[in-house]
Length: 324
Image (cartoon, rainbow, N blue to C red; front, top):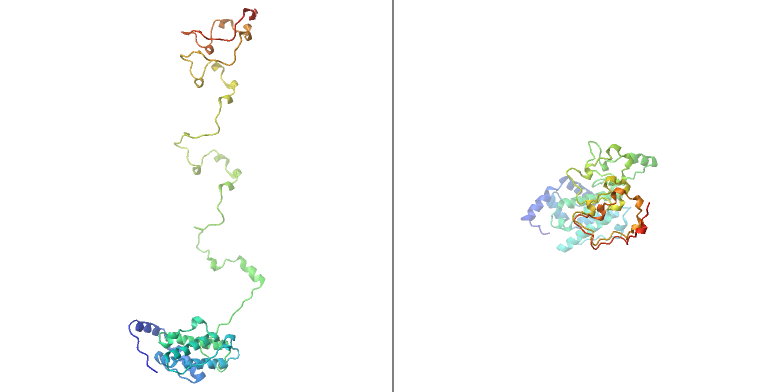
């Protein structure tokens, strides 16, 4: 068997790092177990262990021994065919390693606990090779290999499933306890926590408000200081017809307001006020004797003006005037 060349450069640094994880105690445990089961010696030290296990023959022999002495063999392992090749060709030796890895997985070793072919054939990670053999010894204990009864044990004790059944009373008792998975409330505050949905302003009942503060404009609605009503529209337009005439002052009945315009320097030439009022409609006995010769402002002003072209009602007949 050709000697493996010493690693150089990056391979040397990698081998040095993997060598730091190599456990001589684990190696001794594996060496004694293999020797007691199949009578083979894998040597002492990482380099000797690699040299003796590199062709995969010892590993397959170990696996054959475990298969033969296990009465409770896993179903997947029952269909496995374990055979090895004694040729010195590299690809044949790597095939032997592959057969061992598949057989170990069928026996119960998890895939993440198996080493890679190059870890052994190129000596990249001998610590992982030893760990795989230790896990194989653990599965031998789980499957009830005959060597276990004789005290030939390798690897850690297998972990058995432990199922705990709780009564209904125990389940109800735990409903009022906040588990540590939700954290602890010691020395804690509610800063940044949101509980429930947002509360809308419509949810606040008006009858719960203080009556003294109903006439106060709160800061949430803004401030009315230094503000004007310019551009604001409140309610609808109020028409002049809405104003009750009986609310008006009696003194202002004879005054024409500015809303109706101004009567200064104006005449009634060409203007028509309602329908024609006949002079016969006016009762002479209702008129004031003092105002018979006065023309009111509603009829215009007679100062500097003439009534040329104006028509007030129909022709007044002298017979229509009651003598009273």
